[in-house]
Length: 388
Ligand SMILES: Cc1ncc(COP(=O)(O)O)c(C=O)c1O
Image (cartoon, rainbow, N blue to C red; front, side):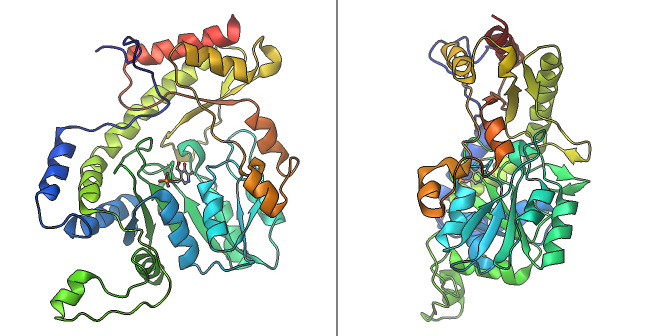
């Protein structure tokens, strides 16, 4: 098969979706049906994702961000409530707390895995703390035994931002089954896509009920229920949004989900190849992976040992981009963003491990459509970048 980098116009991105004929047919069928938005495919997709996560309920929404917002609302985060989370995440995780008027409190990460450190979480608990959000960074699940122990001890909710980890597991428990509420994203760089989309999954009936109210303006019945009851009447029980997902997006999701296991397998094969290659390269080290976790490898992140290199991180980044390798950086620590600095007075020094590691991380391409030639090109380009 032709390498993705052979075509000069083609840039090998760090992540890429895959759409096949089955996906196209699934979407087309719905587009030609009676239901464009909320219809039978929404419920089917919710059930399929909940089954993958080994929980009872799913609530589909139109992005991972909306899912986080709905989760924060479902657990009643109110102005002044504190929610503890990692700064090593996409800002949407923290933004969802702020949408509710809550205060994000950043706890530092483990330097080897970049996952939130449960001991740091416990240090940050105050009388205002209501919840902890764990982010399964890069696709490796957090230490949920330790996190559940802490949240139970202090009577807090545990929310999993599993936008990176669908299809992975922790001690045999699938992503989606280790917290009170778990949030997935179906953005095109993620494992499976619906264009934009997200879902909250849980075993808790009352919480999923609140997610479903929230995604539909706070209305207590949907159009189909009213039709069945021969009634126009509905009530707004609480303020909600239009966070609904369309039926054709859900049809795409159902079709994509069938391929999740084989794609996770392919991601793992590529990651293992990178691991082996980088073992012999001075100046580059992969993140630590815990043996208790089955990794979903949303992204592959390396740490550059810049003290040993002639190039700094920016120079390595530019060198690789010039070679058509779409490296990226995940993430700028959330507390560095001007919005957070201005509103919450966050500053450098708040989470020293995250800050130190941020200076040296680089995400290299990893997605199931990569062929052997692509993997080799990435390896040799990274080698050149750090050794020449
Ligand atoms: C960790 C994490 N949380 C939340 C989100 C937000 O998801 P979405 O882009 O679907 O809104 C993302 C997406 O990039 C993410 O990586």
